[in-house]
Image (cartoon, rainbow, N blue to C red; front, top):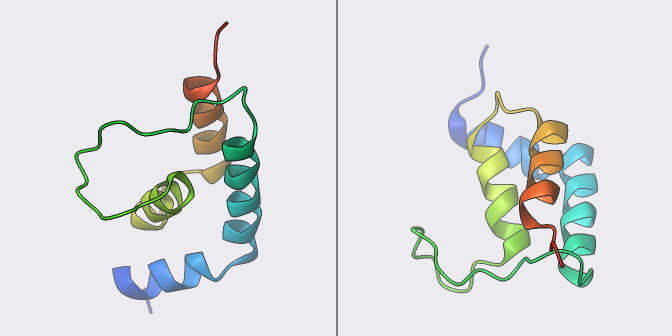
Length: 81
């Protein structure tokens, strides 16, 4: 039996994989090498943090490989000074 979208989101967010990703995202936020400040977003969600935004994205896209997503996110947000 396949999980509904809502069940998958809850299952993912409670998973060990999501916990590891959350730690990685929080580490990125604290690291000045990464630009994690959002100045504009098409998602008009009140006080949606960088960590919450990316965990929500991963939970909304179950076919996405989280390791590849995180690798790309690090490349996109890394400061090039």
